[in-house]
Image (cartoon, rainbow, N blue to C red):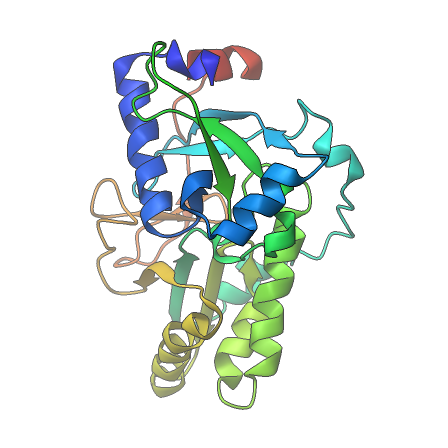
Length: 272
């Protein structure tokens, strides 16, 4: 928190906007706003864990250019978590499947990690410090992460498991969306396609209808032969998929070249 208070006004403003957004969505809350029995459990706990956090900027992200990321390595919190086996689908296999159809889509799940709620008994291990305007002379408040957070070594597998559990339990009602989630979804990015337009339209509708059953929500969906949403595109022409550049109207796949940054990763974090 001390280091973030010394950032530029532009960085502080970006962090405050993101923090306010996750607060309004119920992903975090100040300790004094929790129900009394939860507050008492946290205050009286003989052991509490506070996350250190930093602001991270994602170049090329239209909807969420900056976000608050916890850093469990500072407290060695990640050392006690089981990461689990890599259950992510191969990006190469996903791309091959996706390009084999004339009708295709890509979609992005909005704040996937934050959509997985923590058991309240875990709140005492998920605390962090924040102040309203990130000014050095402001009082510090204790806040609580109510959901999974970016930076936890177990978060990717836990959120992916939750998504696949939803698909499995609702397979009888959403069979096409089930196959998309189980076979062609990588983290919060899904893709799918069909050779038949009618089946394709049903697939898209099932993806939109399925996710809210477990609290997930699509941030944006992009369809081939249509212009991308402003949430998915900086230029109104192209978006990205599996590291490639994809203009959906012309439906061609290109290398995604960007500005080269020769500074070390540590230096970039310091400047962010």
